[in-house]
Image 1 (cartoon, rainbow, N blue to C red):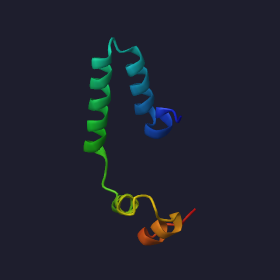
Image 2 (image 1 turned 135 degrees about the horizontal axis):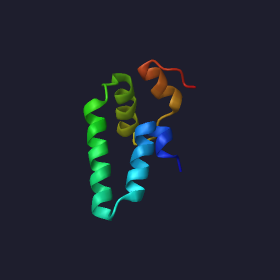
Image 3 (image 1 turned 30 degrees about the horizontal axis):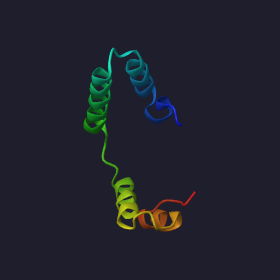
Length: 77
């Protein structure tokens, strides 16, 4: 498992602490939903990343890393 702070930075760490301290599951769900919606609003578009994800989905994961990387102009490393 990857700590939320490793994925979302300090905001993820704060979310993890808030979810842990929430009074019930409904409040936990609300915290996570609000956090994710805020991420959608503040995230800048990443067309190459989106193209890579679309290719993985289109091939149902049956594509090689170097093929996806070459398709979007990235190194396969």
